[in-house]
Every structure is written in C-alpha cells, then in structure tokens.
Length: 487
Figure 1 (tube, rainbow, N blue to C red):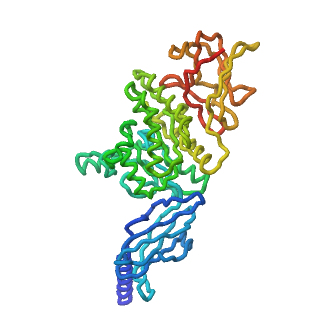
Figure 2: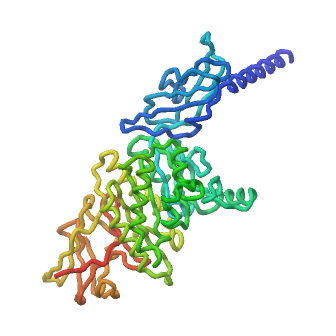
Figure 3: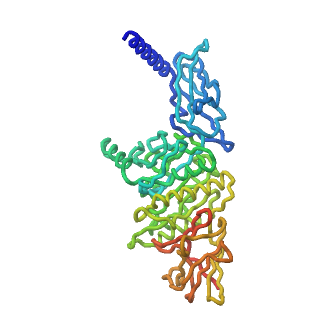
C-alpha cells in the first residue's frame, strides 16, 4: 500500500509538473490543431506561430511525424516581454504533423513546452455558392473522411473533414445564422449534424486531389443554400459577416489566406426573369473581385453548370439562360473551367444526388490537376461545329466536339439531343436514332426523318431531360442550344 501510495503521489507530481510546463507556453496565433498550412508550388509550407512564454528568453520548435523528427529544433524567436513569434520553414507537403514547442531560460533549460497536433501541409480550396455546394445529398451514401483532408468549418475552427462540411448554425456570422436564441441555434446545429441530408462534393474533390497529387487538402466551407448572385455581391464586403462575400473573405483570411483555388456551384436562384439578364455580368464581377481580394490574379475558379429541376410549373427559359451564360463564361474568363451536371441523378427535385456529387468532385479534380499539376487532360466535350448530310441510309446531322478525352461514350443508347422548329419553337420529332459516330469518336450522328424549316439543335433542353454523353475521362457534355443547323 505504501509503494502504491508513493507511486500515485509520483504520478500526480509529474502530472502537475507537466501542467505547469504547458501553462507557461501558449500558442495563440498562426497555427492551430488540425490546420492545413498552404504549400507553395514546390510543395513546401511555412508554419507561422506566435504566443506567450512567461519566464523564457527563447522559444524553439520542431516538426515530427509518426514519432520521427521531420524538421529539427529551430529558434522561433525571443520571448520579448512575454510574447514570441516565429516561422518553421520548408515543411514538406504531408502530415498529420505534430509541432512541438519548448521555451528556454537564459541557461538553455526547458521551462515550458506544448504542441500543436494533427497539422497538415497542403492546398486550401474554397467551397462557395448555394445549396448544391453546401451539400444536400443523402448521407447514407456520403464520402468517408480521410486523415489528410481537413475543413475550416463555419465556426472558424479547423477539424477533420466529415459530412456535413457546412453547418450554418455554427457560424458566428449573422448572414449564415440568425437563430432567435442560443437554444434554437444549438438545435439547428444538431438537426443538421445528425440529419439524413448534408452530403456534398467538397470531400470527394479533396480526396481525389490527394490521391492524384499526394498533397493534403484543406477545405474552407463558405456556401449557403438558396442564395443569389445579388446576395454574393462583392460590393457588400465591408459588411463583414453580415454579407456572404464578406463572411467568405473573413474565413479565408482566418484560415491562412493563401488558397489554391475556388470551387463554385450556384445559379439556380438566379433562374428567374428578374435576375437572369444580368447573371453573366455579376458572375464575371464576382470572379474578378475574388482574385483581387485574395491577391491572386490567376487564381483558378472552377464551377458547375446547373443541372436538372423537376418542376412542371417552372419556366424553363430562365433556367436555360443561366446554363448558357455559364457556358459562355468559361470562354471569357481566364483560368476558369466548368463541369456539367445534366447527366446526374437527383436526391430531390433540384439537388444533385450524393453519387453525382462525388462525380462532380472527380470532374472538378480533372480541371485542377490539368491546370495546376500538368495532367494531360482536356476540359471536356464542347460543341465545335454541326454538319448536315445525306447517305444511302437517310439524312443525318453530325455534331462534332472539341476538348474530348479519348472519345465520347454513353451508357446505353445516346440520349439528350433534340431539334427545335426555330430558336424558340417547340421540339420537332424528327430524330429516330442518336449514336456516337463510328468513324469519329468525337462526334455524334443524329439520324433524321425530315428537318423542319429553320432547324435548331439542343442538348439537354427542358428542365428534366435525360442526357448521358460523356468522354473517357467522365467529363459530361454540357447543356447547349439553340444552335442553328445550317445548310
């Protein structure tokens, strides 16, 4: 009993000493548990740290991974008037890392120590837009987490990236959370965290980028369902957390500032007669503002063309207009890219299903890998030209595409093309067969009985079309039309 008592006393003494040591050295800026520090183009990160160290003259730090020293002890800075700040340079992409810190007195003895845990060195990507980016997919099929993918959540803290990435009630910014009481806010958080919906594309994108590049990923969760371009107006930045754009800028700054790119999924809320005429102008202004305010003139900006909407009472004209303007935007904005979603299944009347969101993450990763890591990938099929012709088997329209990765394909028979009578006229039922051109894998042949006067071609016409053309890299053919079919 005496030995046991002495042992317990000794353990308690050691615990008290450890507590005293930890309390004397504090990290309060620059690096936090689960943070993803941005890497440069060569794959190296700088860990910036600052804090307090009572009774010390020097603070040192080192980086370890799986109990092995990665970066040895380096001087971070003198503890002038109790405060210190410093940088650990050339930390290679990877992790999770443990950043160990110690404070030394004038004799070089350790007087305090602490550590920052689960730190990654990698790339930061912003997730922004409305509900399809926020994530409303069925969680029963959600993407599993990965230890090298973290999220800067809406409560301005880093954590392991798990679905749902976006929990609006966690945000201190009134633009995201306006609960009448703390009790209602906590209930909102619990309902979303534990509910059946909430899967998005961000985690799938991050894991795909990690798989391809070996670089961990940090996601900045900034999306908010049901929001319009007017609500994302960069002119509202000075409102800070009372505006979507201001809140996003605050999040990016708090997350470390240097992001690798932006992923955007929005447009549904602008598919109305009041908003669609100025959508392209506002969209371009948003991209330009983000690049200016993030101090990155060539920042990659990748987005999703809006897909299907199962609503027989909705006017399809504004919806198609948004899809068309999104297609136009990628030709007018450098370092921008668009992926299509028209071929994907839904989990409700307007939201992409979880398997489709994973596909979108893959498609967006194709663009990022192409632009940032030199992958030999093309942007995906885009209309190049239309030809009319006759053959012993009848008349045909050949639709030829550029940007195709190793040929077009379709699950089952090709679907999605239609011909209208005039640019705004009704569909004219003249196509009896759609097929990948057997002589040109980058083209589709539409066999027609008889073309109407002033024929115009569509792909994905209507709010709820069935479309299934993709290329070998699973980049889908986007919605387009009406395009005149000339002689």
